[in-house]
Length: 145
Image 1 (cartoon, one colour):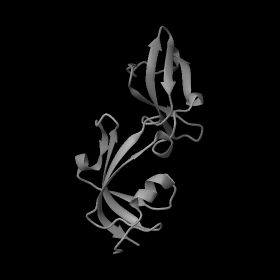
Image 2: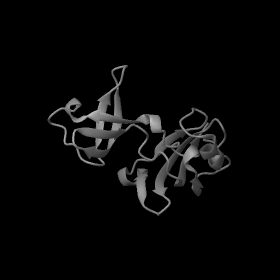
Image 3: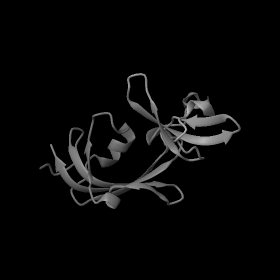
Image 4: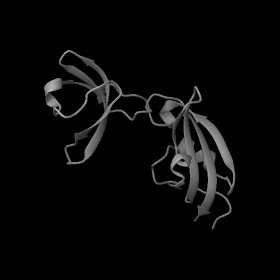
């Protein structure tokens, strides 16, 4: 077990993601299962990882990142208008619903229904928190080399 977080550490942490208004968007505390954060694997921005560097077990870090360093900016090209007939009959279309779409490689891509007008459905394929400045609370539970 390492004593401090380095650029190659694996970090077991409880992570809470909050919007600037203080509302909680997600938290590992809800499930009671902390997450492993692998430093340097590209899952997190450099800015996020910079806040963790040097942290120790039992440290609680609270920091705010602008959208570009959190979940990215909202990209207009990731918003599409689709004909309502392209959706299966059993899919309940309502604003805010997340619908799975098949990708070219056979996987699933989530899309958020942003608007429904007559026979047109506006689907946003950006990350649900894209474009948001985010406050992170990270409680370090364990550090592994």
